[in-house]
Amino acid sequence: MHPDHIATHNAAVKAFYAAGDPAQYPEAGPAFRPYKLYFGVRPRRYMGLMVKLMPLFGQDPHHFGRNKDVDITKTMGVEYPFHTVVRTTKQAREIRVRAAACHASQGGGQPRRGPWLFRINDMFHRQQDYFMREYPPPTRFREKDLFEGLPEEQSS
Image (cartoon, rainbow, N blue to C red; front, side, top):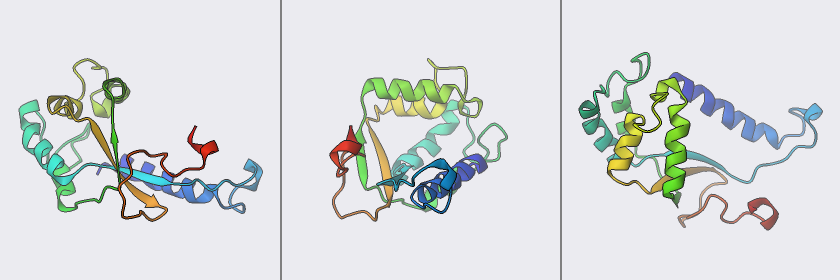
């Protein structure tokens, strides 16, 4: 993974747990324990397909990213479980492509042509996003919505 992604992941996890601890930042107001924490994941078979297709898009899976310091093949060793599968709409996928295009490391400035990853997604009409639930521990049932099981006032 990219060092920036690791740093933002660590910061998000720390913020999630600090939010519910009244001793952490008392000046920020009352503590609020978030109900759930998810991580976006991709099935290993999908990552394998991406690694195989990357050269067709002029990408080296062993030296990827703006600094060529990311080896995507290293993500192939782990099959992350996914506890929630959310069906996406065409509009949501377009928004994702435009958002990624704003970042230079993701192929910025090319919203229509899109970054290579999103072009591959479009080729296979990927219509689902996968999430691993960190907190609370997942049940044996797969969720279809990130807001599933939340109190009514939190899900709207």
